[in-house]
Length: 340
Ligand SMILES: NC(=O)c1ccc[n+]([C@@H]2O[C@H](COP(=O)([O-])OP(=O)(O)OC[C@H]3O[C@@H](n4cnc5c(N)ncnc54)[C@H](O)[C@@H]3O)[C@@H](O)[C@H]2O)c1
Ligand SMILES: O=C(O)C[C@H](O)C(=O)O
Image 1: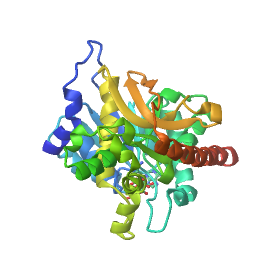
Image 2: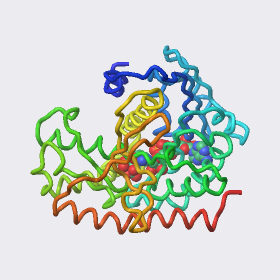
Image 3: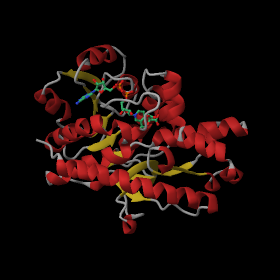
């Protein structure tokens, strides 16, 4: 409970509007996985969640039975791995979080996961488009730079795409950046707010230290590299047993909480996310991660990247080249392999 308080504390300090809607069904697709299990636990600890629906191709009901004994008010239900189970898990959902998919092993890039995860995400997106077209969809499954465009294309194909409701979860990048900076500066990470823009893999992850409390860090190439390749550190340390799960569960729970707080009427909720964005559309890049102000309808406002220095400008240029290819790959996949 203590940990959950720390994760959700920021929201509790802000005011709620009178029109706040306080019933929230949250669905986790991939709930029995390395991320799915701790994420489901953190969501059970979140007082804003009233109904938790846990679905996986294996083990959903078991995780649900376990989590359901945690003595918070929300109800928890596990669903069987059938199309009907999936549809029931999604029906009436306000927030759908998707960590379903395979994780990396040492030596792999996130893009190496594309062949397996693209079809998993496409098929889950189809189910969402049919059963929960108005939910906020939070994509964790990698490669996020491609899986988010896949979801958008599937929704467009069904005529239900709402760009304000689709989020690639990049929260872990800002979580890592603030922690790594605090280690260098000997500060409390809660006071370190590092803007990270771009996408969620390698050089597409662009930390903007010039906008932080420590603009001197912009020339710290080792730190920039650590933020861009923080995921690799975990993959290497787990030595074949997967990638970040616990820190990711915390980051996913924080993002879901932000979406719920905004949905329930809280003003001024800002989180980073990879969204359908106008910022670089003139360069043919339809999705970009930046700070996003959330509201009752999902994305309320996409904040500009802001001023960057010469080092960061170079990072941004490298990011945009890769990002464009990653997005195009997702779009092309759905075009050639539409959901059945
Ligand atoms: N966005 C991020 O910052 C971030 C961070 C960490 C991991 N990830 C990604 O999250 C994904 C999951 O990682 P993990 O460590 O939890 O993997 P995992 O293998 O431990 O868990 C994945 C779960 O998804 C389930 N699954 C597979 N296909 C499914 C389907 N069609 N429907 C429902 N469930 C299905 C599996 O049964 C499994 O329980 C990976 O792609 C990983 O790269 C993203
Ligand atoms: O590194 C990975 O493959 C998982 C995730 O994207 C991460 O950043 O930890």
